[in-house]
Amino acid sequence: MGRIKVVDHCDWRMAMPDSSLLSLLKGKRVPIATSCGLGSCGTDMVLVVQGQENLTPIGTTEARTLAEMEAPANARLACMARLMDGDIELEVPEDSLQV
Ligand code: FES
Image (cartoon, rainbow, N blue to C red; front, side, top):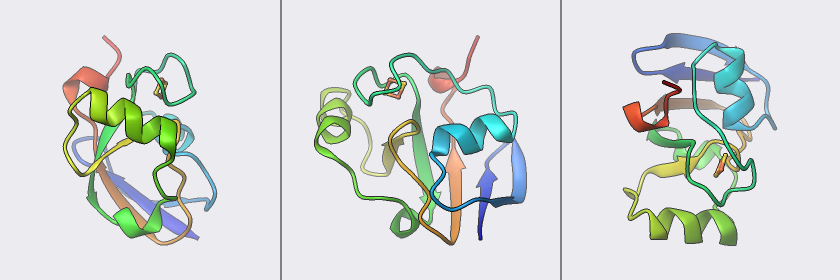
């Protein structure tokens, strides 16, 4: 079992391993914006505060999208990154929230 914390949204909560960050965030009622669900639009970029090692590796599509966005090194796309196990702390930038 893992745990997730989202800065300014929720403190540590249980999280099922093998869940996408997108499903975990929606499950914690964080109003993250989404669009393609395929790692190509970058709408759901999140920043990993701690626990990067507990996420699945970045794939080709996600890496290309993050590079095109000139995203910070700790950025992941919530629809693509999955929690393997352990704890993850995220920050969701304002631009990644639904308006
Ligand atoms: S929803 Fe488009 S990259 Fe995740």
